[in-house]
Length: 69
Image (cartoon, rainbow, N blue to C red; front, side, top):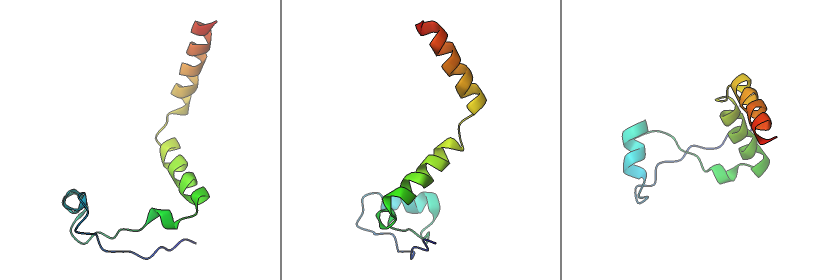
C-alpha cells in the first residue's frame, strides 16, 4: 500500500556514518514523514506491542492496583 521509494543516505547528515556502519553503506532509507500519521502511529504501536509480555504486564497492573488501595 505504501511502497515508499528508497533513497540514498544523506552524507551531510551527522548520523550518516553511524547508520552506514550499522546497516551498510548501501542500505535503503525512506522518509517516514511521507507516511500518513495514522499509518506511522500504527506501525510504531504494533512494533512496541510486539515486544510486550502482556501476561506479565497485566500481572504488574494487578499488583499496582493492590498496592495503591
